[in-house]
Length: 114
Image (cartoon, rainbow, N blue to C red; front, side, top):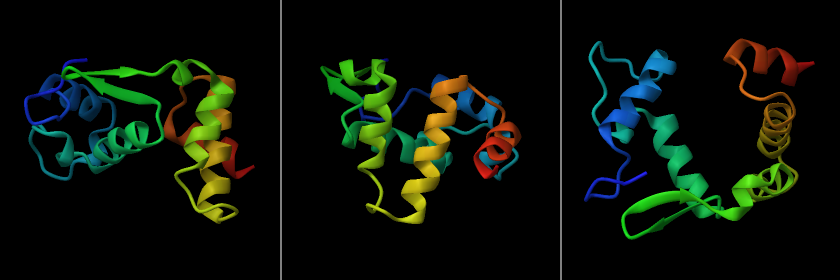
């Protein structure tokens, strides 16, 4: 997807995410920039830093590694402190999503906490 001149996700993407996760923006109006939705801004940053998304000529696109579920889990684990609780929780959540596909938040929590 083509980013804005400031390197942010387009407003249409921000608002589409807000539609899916309305609780991520506390104000009662449409979000304008990805920083209005902190989880989206953090996800954008993490995906680029671990090499699952790259920016070339103003276009953000997935890397080859993003197409391999095992490599996605491996790279996302790098973001967390090795052996820490957050790493364990995130690894489990990503593995559940990789195995089952998209899940509602409640379903994901139920499967991870089991």
